[in-house]
Image (cartoon, rainbow, N blue to C red; front, side, top):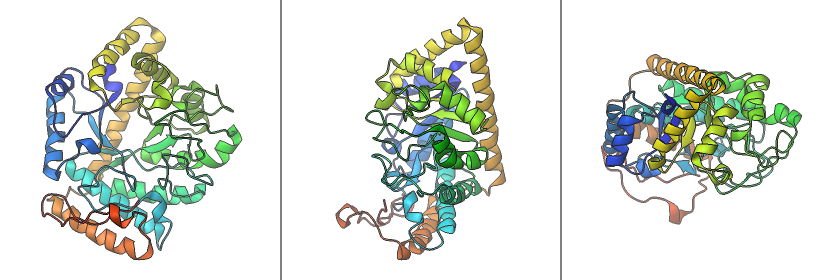
Length: 380
């Protein structure tokens, strides 16, 4: 049914009665966690356990855990370094792999299957708003090396990955959370630069997130990539050669949400080629979107064919996630084991790199054994 192509968010650290009903009746393909959902380590793991127990088919649990400014686990682990920080010291690939492995360990213990990372956007001369220090490099080959190391670290711990933000927003004009961001480059420029990490790492990751950037030299000037068939199907499938899972970025970001109702933009994103449509907030709207998509599937052969294609990729990615888990060691016995590994990582990482977080913004609290708090400073 169409609900199995939706990714949804939750409101807090425990389920509301409405969320329990929705999860029981309308099982989504994925549930995405944010900082608002992360409590103590045991509390968070219990939230995830309940989500999976209620659902008719347990959804894949996902999270954006990059480190730096996008660090959903900042209150469970020491502040993890940003992607950009890895290239600023010794042994960048080795440290990126270690960072990915540490994050993977934590997510595996919590029972979160997928990290919506790494970011493989190739940085321009200046990072656009919303992407500060989230990119590994301004050189495509370095992005491939460091993002690939991070990705393999995740996989080694049993956590799957998802590259973002296709086809690259490293030279964007603005933050798509708040409005349109324009990437005014030619197709050849994308092929020669921005698409390289997606083409080289896409099959290994198995999933790519489609961004909301506008590419006026590829399609209509005001059309986000997530709603563009030329980008999300033709460029992704034919030019990049990727046949894995295409996941939309959050459809509630203003770059796309301002373009129509939830129902309208979900249909447009799905027909453009996204296999999973993400709505990170307003879970109360999920039922209406699900019913709308269900009617569309039953109303025409072309929509039905698109749905069957998407569910094929959704099922194959589930198998990919399961294989990564099966090949990895078992999860840590306690969260304290992960905290100890985090302490080793930060001790090794810190000497050759400078923290970008002001002293006034650093946490001063002491570690609380078993609770997931460390008191270590946070890098951005």
